Image (cartoon, rainbow, N blue to C red; front, side, top):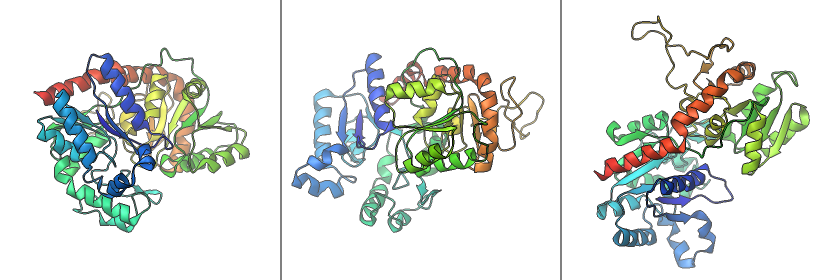
Length: 414
């Protein structure tokens, strides 16, 4: 299991998922050899090692040496790669193949194409580098770490390693949206498997709480400003409480909203016990991202806790709440007939622009649409709680996703 950990100062769901995946595989009887580097190592590196950092995204010689030694000593069946940047480099794929080891990669972002990995720039979705041999727009706009030089290096890395990525034996797409991204990049469909992440079962859901919870990084792409715009369109107190948990550059927005309205509470950053308590106290979890969010873990946590989700119809959010394939009521008949989602029995009528899925609702990333959906979600939450938990058990439970992953390993090993 190869992964370059993100800095601990920048909380990463990807780090958490890799740790959980190692634990789940080990519990299932798989021998896992962690090959882990951390970006927190960089400040303590020697001057010689730091001098090589600029080329490490393209080729990290120390990592290749250490990985070759691991292959020689242990002869693993599969290399499972997560994030290679900056200390591993996609070159680990070539190193594995040189040793006859097949490679599986979980795709957590859009960095095959986008230097930042987000498809998001200056507060808006951006796909300017899509389809280009070299991501010149990323350099012009300093998309990687705010540096033109580092953006040029990352754009070059992506160009150099296009054949490397296309040699990966199997891609694990976390959602149907990521699978579509990979096909657009040129990966054959038969080398892509949709398998989401899973989280440990928190146990039987607590009785439904009240109001809404926004839990996540307080950064522009997560849509806190969109949520607050929609929330302010309702009189104070009419929607129940809104709790905001997390930290980041938009923290002042959360603090100002809490000072302005009696129905908004800012909880700040939470530990695991705090997250659990916040989920238990709410009725609906919000995922209002304004970028193509790949797989926000908070949604899986919500489903595991029996809480429906109201989110934007971007990235993997529709897949997570079961709204990416709308269900067609009996009687709509012929192919091409208009498909409409069917909300669970007892829910209110669905306003225009709102799509009801198995475990919640998605709306366009617009304040008016989100504002219209908030009362619907509050009223309809009780009808979705059982469906939310069931979706977790069928799709995101560790037993389900771990078996799926072992089947993927077996396939590439054959």
